[in-house]
Amino acid sequence: MQHTDKKHSVHFAEALLKSHLSQPEEKRIKLEGTGGETLEALFLGTRGGNAKYMLELMGFALQGNVDFRKNYFPNDPDYLDTNIQQSKGFKETMLLMGLEYDKLITQLQQSGTFFSMRTIGHMLWDTTLPGMLGYFAALMYNQNNVAAEASP
Image (cartoon, rainbow, N blue to C red; front, side):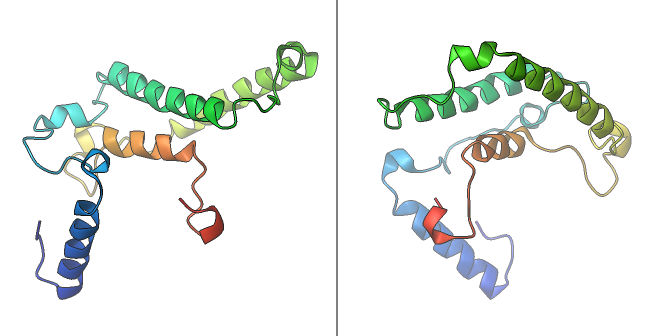
């Protein structure tokens, strides 16, 4: 657990562990055992070879969010319906969103190629799948960590 001798860091790590251990067993993040020992499984891959796994896990997160929404006061009316989704305005908006999203993806492809083996020895490398998947999952729940009234 200790990777530093700084008192504040050690105190924080100990408090974090104590908080974690106070959770019921089923809510705890697994901190013991072999864990993920194959480093290659933790990245998308220089050629995207782990994309199918990332898409599968993103699908779990998306479905979990959809299920959460459906089960929250399930008898309330739904704002969306097939009439709205079949309307000209809805279809035009979806088309425009797709076109603009494609432009965004194209522009983002001008970013640094930190996934490449050519940059592995520099200051940073690829983003991990657990990091990206956690960010994606949390983003759908619109976390507000500023105001206590809306924070998790």
